Length: 175
Image (cartoon, rainbow, N blue to C red; front, side, top):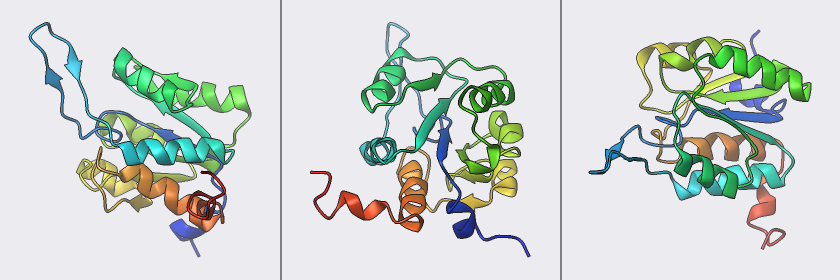
């Protein structure tokens, strides 16, 4: 019998997120000078920082390239940020090899076709509620939240709760 997504969450040590459509709502605001602006959710940021402080690996693999996004992610404590990635599977395999992480210990959250093949390699594939049909079809867990609206927070919080680590963030031990 196949494991439920909650059972799989017991084995997760690493979170990998796409950016556009996962950590953002997929909208791009273009300034008169041509700069592309994105909006990120503060609750997603809190959860990513909490995961890092609790010993999880957090990695970003994105096809996009925006220095503002990179700065925001670095400020959260994320050091493994792969931007302008044309081959996510290759980047994923290099990341796993670099840190000797087994794919079954990884939760990957993506939202669209560029994430498809890498999502087939991980222990727990997940996506925001507003992801493409193809991604929803291969996801073990579909968040009730949309991209950029708390989907990353949702999966991180669930994993940390399953593993008994989330309570540290509301019982005063991380004030």
